[in-house]
Picture 1 (cartoon, rainbow, N blue to C red):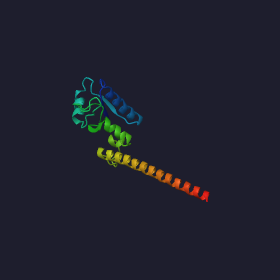
Picture 2 (cartoon, rainbow, N blue to C red):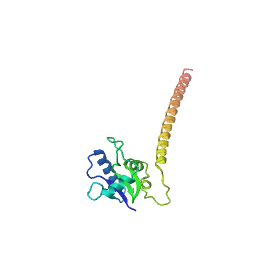
Picture 3 (tube, rainbow, N blue to C red):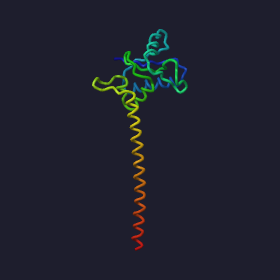
Picture 4 (tube, rainbow, N blue to C red):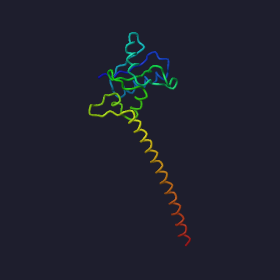
Length: 158
């Protein structure tokens, strides 16, 4: 199985260039072997068509949120589509990159994008609940301290 990263060596879009560099940097840092396919090189028209036809996500950018054709980088494991930059970045952030790239062992169950987003949302919700509880406890403890101080002052007066 060969991981392929489809890139554009002649992109005029700075965001696309940065995304391509980030994907390659992360793959290098994790020692994941990959082949880079530059779709702008002469003779790579068939590779470009394959990328455009099999990509299910267009890889929209800030400057072009709904591109007509999928923008690089797009990731494939052999001819099986893995995802675009946004999906790659999310998988990297939640530490499921090997599953996303379909490099995980066969006994590992694949995690869908919806499950990834749900886990992230649940994690944020739990974090917010914990912060709210901590604030409530501080408030209660603060009120308790006032009562203790008042009781101590009353005892001192007697």
